[in-house]
Image 1 (tube, rainbow, N blue to C red):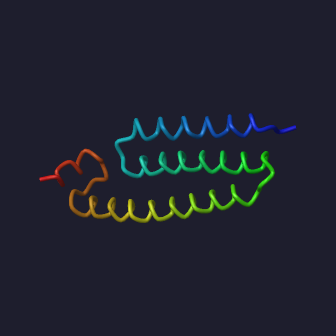
Image 2: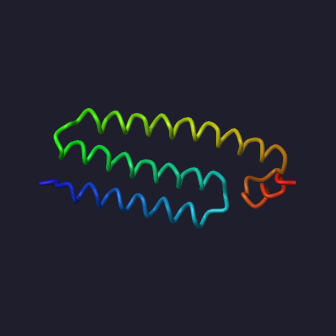
Image 3: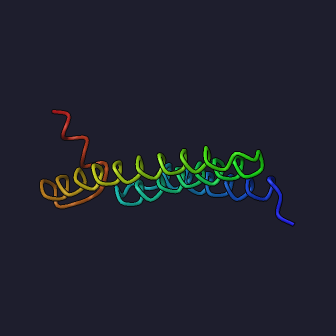
Length: 101
């Protein structure tokens, strides 16, 4: 039988993988993948808590809101990555420090 702790462990593993990816990647696409893993771990927790508390609709609404937020974040971030690549011919995040000047 699958319990709440099983879902939470999957969420923790996804969160740790996402955090590790965000902290170790210098590539902008790798950073985006790490952020998506972090958001997916939150979705798993929203749905697990709503399932085991009995009110299914609230968890689904929160997860849907989180998915919409992730999609808009990905669209804006990919547009920024394309502009960085257009200007610097690399997607390394260290090149973006020159944008401050």
